[in-house]
Length: 126
Image (cartoon, rainbow, N blue to C red):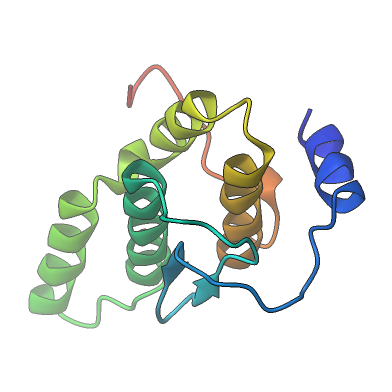
């Protein structure tokens, strides 16, 4: 299904042209949507921010007990263990809108290298 959505996005002009960007993130995985939007849906923006934070802290080195505690606290605060399920829920909420689902897939590619690499949603973390 994801391949079909990407084919549709490419056919309707998902290009690198400069547009107003309202769905965005900062470092360490900066992103600006390529779509002109009146506003970014709050659930999408919140998910992008969490994906950014979770990927950042997952890559951090716990070089001592204090740093490990900081990383663990950030992972808990951002509910990183639920990220795959929350991605799925937000996708399903916006499933009929190729712009919004395109934003989700494009940012997944930025963070994980592929939209297929988004963490799985399992019954353990729902």
